[in-house]
Figure (cartoon, rainbow, N blue to C red):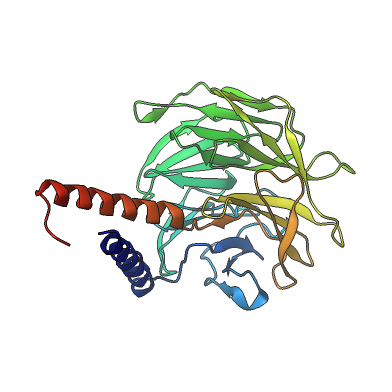
Length: 335
């Protein structure tokens, strides 16, 4: 009986792997997407070597080419593998969102005029939130309908959703939370983190702790700050995660979390080179995982999450155990 159950688990895991390979699309779990150079997106696959980089077709609109200018270049993946990119930079250029299918083709372009800067973006649960210099805009996942505008007199830099669907919006020096209530977001935000200096990106780990890229004041060290979740809020004293010493004068920019390997990735970029840095939730320093002189002035980043194999195996074992118990009771079919 034990041998039979183990064979069932082996066969199920193998069939799961085969199905994944057979239906694979160009966008793959573990890949990192980095907008750069005005209208390009680098698609970097594990093991994150120079040979593991491909490039998406140029976008219909551009974004800023400065490593510090907050005009376009936000990027996010939803749970269905669609990629969303904010575009628009410079006087008179069209601002908007480009939605790209997992096969790499543009399926939707939403334009919003030429005055509002669209910055960091997040996508989850059928909603797409965008940080702008005049509030946060929320759309449906198909970009057919604008659902809400929040805090229209406030400039934001990045946005993120937590596991409960609440929306977090990053100012230069604080993080506000808009709670999800009855399918909509409260119009009155709560400030959950303050005391930042030049913050540009935020993300959560699997435990709900909040991480913020803070570039600090001039001549101060740029770093990621970790705010530990405490009940419904976060610790007021962050842990600092330092970046390694690199050549030139690079700037930290994008940040995203890969739950399958419990790892954060960070953009460290300049006009001559871009490094991808990584760290785990318990680290106090980042390390370089990828470097490229072909990718310059990178923007935010998005990571396509990998599945957690242990969870899949445990699920299959649980299914096998249930079937074994049913067979013992005489109500299940033989296997």
